[in-house]
Amino acid sequence: MIMLAATTRMPRAAAMPLVNDAIASLGGWITGHGLFGAMVIVFRFEMAPANLAALARSLAAGGIALDADSRAVIAAAGDGAGEVPGTLHLAFAGGEPDVRQEIPAVPG
Image (cartoon, rainbow, N blue to C red; front, side, top):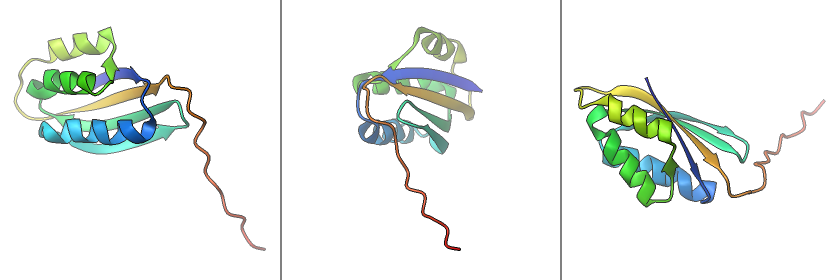
């Protein structure tokens, strides 16, 4: 499994489609995601290892910077055939307010 970590100052609403489009444009698939308040989104994806370097470049061009460990993981991934599962842990440094979800009252 490929585990990547990145940070950005862009709003969550702009980052989510940017990551989705970057992965999809390189032949990858988003298999799921998890929202952790206003601080972190974790994307689960599958992608050919040969496309990971292009993913890093695409994310960087959009304002999402992978950390040094993630860049090392990509360099070591090689050009293997087939798809590998991965995660992208995206932390937001922009200071947006926390995500609030209304929970409706249960009658009775």
